[in-house]
Image 1 (cartoon, rainbow, N blue to C red):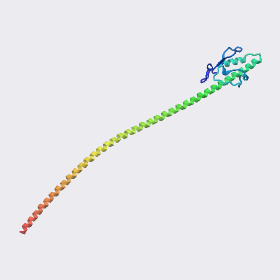
Image 2 (cartoon, rainbow, N blue to C red):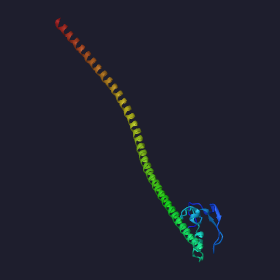
Image 3 (cartoon, helix red, strand yellow):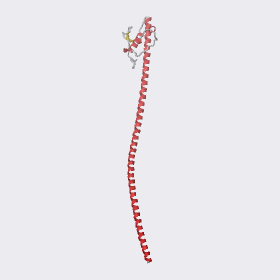
Image 4 (cartoon, rainbow, N blue to C red):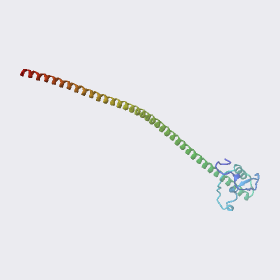
Length: 204
């Protein structure tokens, strides 16, 4: 029998009255709530509602019931003591059952909470892994973009140089063509002058 149930108030914390000792029972203090007076005097059923159970008191009630009591009044008192002891035991069992149910509920809640925490940790690790992968990919893209920008700048400089060279080459080609045309024109003029001179000579 559990003398005190976890989560319940102790008998020491409850109002107490002095119990009248019977045969073989030492004088002791009992809980007011566990009054063992007859139901007619208490005005309630034989069922005793307890927040805690005193194992020593239950034992004293059982010993009292086992004593040989000659009078009818003492017999009724012994019978009532047995009923009270049974009520105490039933109440103790109920308290123990409720306490066990609460513990089981708490255990399930803790188990659920641990699973949620574990699942949360797994999700966080997965997200962290994805984030690291995205960061790595972004770093690669940034590096590739910088290289591409540098390549474009280089190609642009090369293109500008080629355009400049093309303009210079085109200018030189045009100058060469102009000079060539000028020489041909001068040559044609010289030949034309000779023809004129020959014609004049032939006319004379």
